[in-house]
Image (cartoon, rainbow, N blue to C red):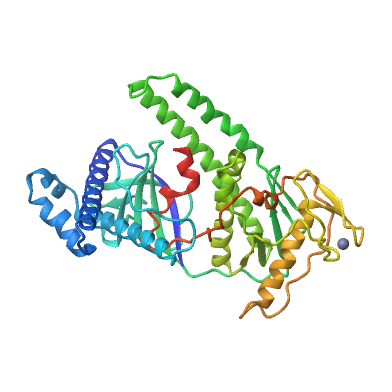
Length: 435
Ligand SMILES: [Zn+2]
């Protein structure tokens, strides 16, 4: 399986200048190819093949006066740039034909020098890691890397990314064998909330990280400062960078927290059941800020990635499942439960429920039943979780917000797929809203 490992790198001023030129060349090649495809389409010609396109926008273009400078950079990143464009087209066609799950993917767009994120991909021949820990990139030289954790295997490619905050990262793709953990006799249902982050069916409450709220003040202050600067001015650009840096810090803190939470769940539980929520739909509503903050889509993606790697199961219960209405004690289907109903007593068996914990237990039961009934499901029934104390804090149940006119949920949580990993992040719904 492919995993992505990202590290901060510190190119020298000279290397940054070379990188900037390469980013620029890759962008021009990419845009030329995109324009050629668009023109072919307009003229009613067949879809240009990648090989022909490569000859046109790289080999032939180098011989022209206006694109001669393309030969000053290595050809590898340029070809990679075209591959990414191909992947973007594949995603678009797949999405249109319905073969690709998830959010609809639009046509590739022209890239701009002003895009916050610039990237450049090197395949196996384009880079190597030196004995002294430096990353050698073709025609750039040895770049200092902060190895925050060990690479688990030899990387097959590396993407150099410059983000809006002016930071450089090297993102390696490594192919590793799954590393299955010993089985544990515990499964858990997870109910996601807004006041609390999540309630697990074993009674554990994952609280919303308050440090994130605190961290958020910084980007807001930076944003206010930016709004006082003249547009297009030097000070405006400086303030813009400050905003980007502050946002990047919040994003890092959030990601770090999500990694900790998901690792803990995957380590302790054999199977995790989630409700299929339409986070994308919700993000558009008035609850947008909290939803973004919570990063649910990422939560699920991380769980799924880690489950694949460590031999655990993540199963998503269909979103029409009435997790908040069912009594987890007797199975009676009670009436609708508006958001303000934090606890309720079952009209049949009389058990008093905390709505989140009850929903988490229902999700657990529904998920286990799903897997039992599925062809090729697990060998035995899931392990029942002993009931424990009620969670101390309760949150808004996302499941009940489904009535707010939400589109069908996408599959979400797509693991790294070779070739398209560089296309995806820029379109992530979370990032887009920050830029
Ligand atoms: Zn009941």
